[in-house]
Length: 310
Figure 1 (cartoon, rainbow, N blue to C red):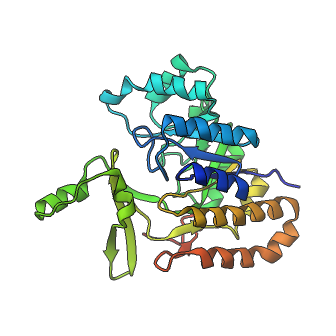
Figure 2: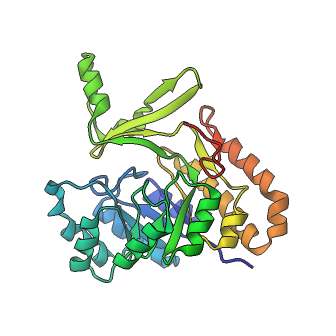
């Protein structure tokens, strides 16, 4: 029997928190747009307290994202937020900026930290550097191959988290590019949080690809045209002992996320406990995942096998 990785999901609200836990998630990442990047939903302080209660009653975990790019105007707020998260019983803070790490050392020295810069966790030396600074986990970049992930995991002195499903960010700018463009065109498009629900795309006719694009307090985000899915390719990472598999729920409805979580729960349990049955059933699991996809969003294997070019 192999060690089972944590199944980590990003839900959009408290209802989704309960539903993904019921579907088999072990942990969730939530937070506020003011402090976290590309969250599936906005969680107030009251929501975070409620999510922690829901999770801890079931032996599950709640991580809060503080991985935004911070300028001087927000640095003074971090200690208060960190102190709140500790008091609320949050299990870990996800960070990228050293300002968060330094703040945690002062305001909540016992708080567990997960290092996530989205793009720069590409080798085990860097992962171990942040481990020596206080991080318990490194969230690997999405642009790594399966062989690179396994090699990093073999040499890492911290836990390793890998995204296995969902869309990924291709581009971020702190500028409000959509709003600026619309203003230049003489059109009225207020840039508000609800822009995530407006279903804006950049359309590439040559590739028949639609790239979701939205703006929020952290700037402009352009997402991948396809969703990663490696539900049928979990053996190597489970055998290597990768610690956490993440399903990203951004721009996804809870019905979809709940069903995908249940599929990965089944896949992980089979692969860890009964690998022969997993080998027999993994094509059927992939077919079920494909059946859940919206018509304009295909599944691919991201950069795991270096097949994808966006």
